[in-house]
Image (cartoon, rainbow, N blue to C red):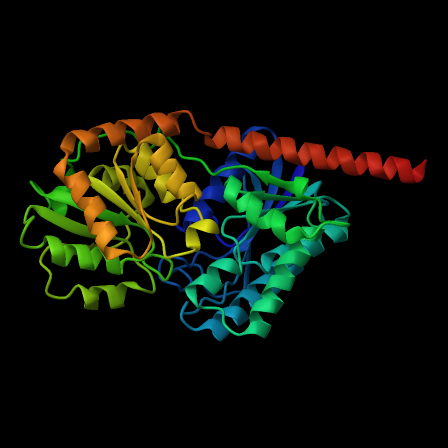
Length: 424
């Protein structure tokens, strides 16, 4: 089967969604499928096109492992500049659409990833051009996330984004989401009627590579490099942006500075919110900032912590599932999650016995939960072991690839039957 994939990031870009799609593409290729990936030039790390990749708006490359890759300019901008970012999404989507619909090799199915939501239009246009099924993969539900963050404002703007969201869902042959609560969110927006069948919403979770990320000693070169030997390390590892309530970390660090001098907080990563967070933490000797590490070092980074933090702002856990949660569980480390009750993150942490979930944006509850884990090393060990057991029974990259391949085959066969009935 020939599969056309449209996504905002792909290896060697280091964005989490890029790593997800790279693994899915590899799993599909291992099953014998041929792919054409239309994506952006690498730009995630510094929000600027990586050195060596600039100079032209389109690059094509042969990829023996999967097929072909076409990379277009992403028009990178500062996340805080909403109008510029909207224009950037539009420019990237326009280029991706042009490349996809002009392809000389007809695909059998089109898979497009969101965010950005606009990339769904590119997927729909390409699928319509070739008269093939269109699958829309939703990693975060937009515009919900942007509205919750206050990034998207104004009734008309929000209404327009919601119309685009519903338009894309209804024209997709299937919409894949990461969890049951995200599925309920999307299904509620379909509205019934033509294109509104809620059964088109399918749950295909992301995955964690339990071979790459294994339980390991915390006493490693990462700790030595950053002066963390002999300390109790509480870590946030990931993007430092608008979605994360990292002010909770600063609050907890102030609270624990004198009464728990052995504890050090590590923020490992970069993003648009890091500078402000560093300013907020100025003068706190128990907070360290470490730049994003290469993917090859991820197992070591995760192992270096005694407790990992997953803080999402109020409302966001209902439309977003951070993939780093499953990596932390694979590393056998306990989690303190600050998220909405009843969401995938909270249910996973509590259901697996992998840590503690507290209400979002509540500094008192956050510090109390952290104290509970710090007070009880045995509880931390049990939680880490439980989290590891949970992900060992979860989907592997190969299993997720097979789930997508089965969905594609189902949709292609359904379309073939419909065409046969029309011709008959």
